[in-house]
Length: 434
Image (cartoon, rainbow, N blue to C red):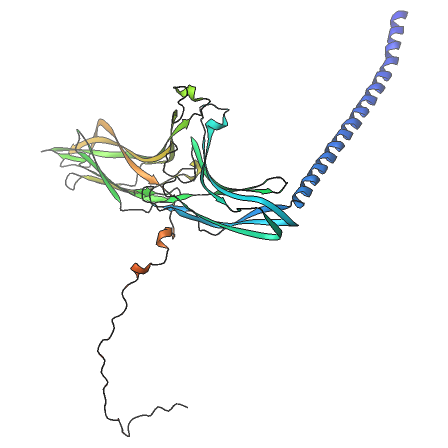
């Protein structure tokens, strides 16, 4: 027992010492962390200050002012005359003067695939093409303090694809400016360009579908060109729904109608020279690639009412007119057919379910289902494009040339002077000029 009491006393005396040492360690740890945070904050403030100072003390910088209207390619790629790009590249000199060896502006088209041949190869995933290049300086020049403007212009060809951000690939355009100060660091500036395509809507397209072995015939009137924003009407008529006998008749009753807009994307991911062996033919990778395809629905709806049914007129018919639209949340892509391998097309799919019924001619309202039903499916190609608005193509805005000036008014080749007697009379009013 004395030994046990002595051990307990020893433990009781050692407990305060351990707690005191732990408190001292925690305080030292907190002070160390506080000093570390303070040093990190000071380093961040110095870094931000150095960046701000670098921006303020930059000898010169680029700016750009666009003068052309929005870049819209009017008409399909086969007949479009393109869009004019024009503006001014500005060099803002912050110091008293700066000497530039060259100023270059370049229009680039970038195609980036989402599924490259090699996932970690930038040459496989991104292809950059130079469409045009401006050499704004032909010899070194010294620019004084202030803003110096360099105009530029270019006609973007009508066959080029519009800016597209699809599921399988992206197509982007941008302007890149370079300037090399004498003995200094290169200056660089980029500006993205949004190139759109607008196809004018044509006449309504009427399509007829026959569904053998039945006598059903569907007529659909749809707009050939639709837009990502806004709705468009669809007219639907189903003929041949009634078949009459001597005492009985059978007819098809529509139960529901579904419509959807499918977006089908295709892309050929090219391979670079380094990874051409993955697509076959070593050393012959140019023009080879991997084909990808994607199908998604960008708008759909189901209708269970809203149509007019007439079984008594002729062979019977069902008429319906409804509005369809594209969901903006799906981020649709306009139609693209590019030589880069990117193709985007759209289809309107209409499905309806009809059920067969029969009744006696004397009591047409007492119908009995036969149990037979059919699903009728129709597909139509539609073009998704941006709205043209009030804009017109650049070639239609130019002033008329000499040959387009209409003929002037006719000239009078024979003129005769008529001498008459002076008109005098009391009832005449005289005009006096003061």
